[in-house]
Length: 489
Image 1 (cartoon, rainbow, N blue to C red):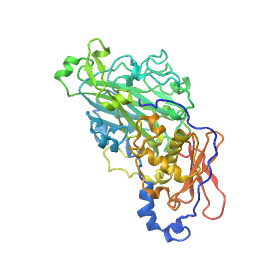
Image 2: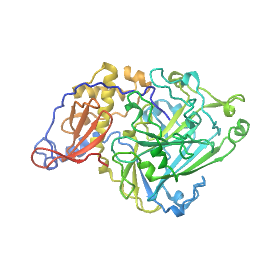
Image 3: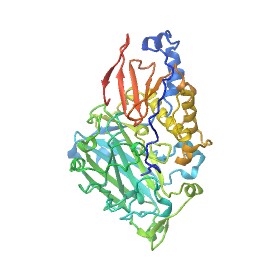
Image 4: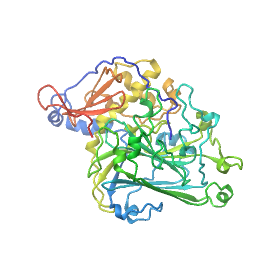
C-alpha cells in the first residue's frame, strides 16, 4: 500500500531539446562499421550496462479450472509444483537493506501464480508472530496525508475498509508488458477473513483499478472502481485461512510461529478491463506483476483495536513518520509500490505446473531500451524537483539519475521522497554508441523520449510523461518510420 506522499504531476509544458544521435544498425553492430560500434563491444560493454536494474521475472503455468478449489489451503498438486517467489525484501532495494540490516524482513513470505483461459490464480503464505487484522483502519497524527493533496485515508465513509492499515498482502497486475501503465489492478487482503477493500459497491472483494500510477494523476485521487469494471469482477473467489488466533496477544506470546494463507481466483476479463494495450493470457504473453506485504511492529494494548498498537521500531521509522514496513517483490527503490515500469515480468506458459521450466523470452522485454526510458523518467522527475524545469543536456539527466542512486546524495527530490535507493548503472548506459536517445516536447504530457539500441536498430521505443510506451518500426534502409502497434503489447 506504499503510496507517494503527494499525488501530483511534477511537470509543466516545457520543451526538451534532442540529444545527439548516432547511426547504428544490426549489420553495423555485427561488422563494427558505420557507428564504430562492434558486436563484441555491444555484448561486453553496452548490453551489460543497459541491462542494469532489469526486474526479475516469473513464469506462470497453466491449470484446468476443474482441478482448483478455492479453500485457502493451497493443497492442490498444481500449487505444490508451481514456482514460489520467496525473496521478498525492503521496498528500497537490496543495497538499502545492506546498509540497514534492521530493515530486512523478519517473517517469511511465499507467493505463486497459476492461470487458465478464464482465470488467474494467486496463492500467498505469510509467516507471522502476531496475527493482527482490524475491521477498520485508523489514522494516527503521524500518518496523516499531506494537506496539499485530496484527503485519502481509511476513515473516509466511501472506503468501507482498508486492509493495509493492518498487516496485509497485496498484488498488482498490469495486463501488458509495457503498454501504458493505465488501469492496472491492485488487490489487498489481510488475515481477517471478513476484511476486504470493496470499492465501487460491487461484489464483496477488495480491489482497486488505477487509471494511472499515483505520481501521474495530476493531483487527483485515483478513480475508484466504476460499475463497468465492477461487473467484470463477478466470478472472483477467495479464501483466507489463519494458522493461529487472530487479535489475541496472550495466545501469540505463547505461539510466535503462526501464519496465514490466501488463495484467490480472478476473472481474466476483469484484469483486462479498460486497460489499453492489454493481451489475453496465452503461451509466451508477458504482463507486469508485483507483490507487496505491509508489516508493522506491534505491542499489546488492550484498549487498541485488535488488542495491539503500532510502534516505531527504529530511528529511521521515526524520521519517515510512518510505521509500516513494505516487503516487496520486486523493489521499487522508494516509498511507492505504484511503479509499474519497475515491476517484475510475468510470462504465461501453456505447460502444466511441474513440467520442464519454460524459457523466459528476455528479448520481448528489451530492457536496454525500456530501462533507459525508465531512467530518463526518474531523472527528469528529479530535475524538476531540484530546478523547477527540465534539462536539455543528457549529461545533466545522467547526473540527476546518479543522485537517485547515491545513498549519500541529498536534493529536494530526495527530501520529498525521504528515501531513494535506485540501482546504479555503468557509464556506458548513457553513451551515444550504446543508446541513441532523444527527448522532445509533448503538448499533453510535457515531454516524450525515444531510445534506439544496436541490438534492435529497427525499433524505436518511446515513452511520454505519463509513462505511456509504444514501439515504432524503422525501415532497415532509407528514412521514415511507421507505427507498428499504437499500444504495443
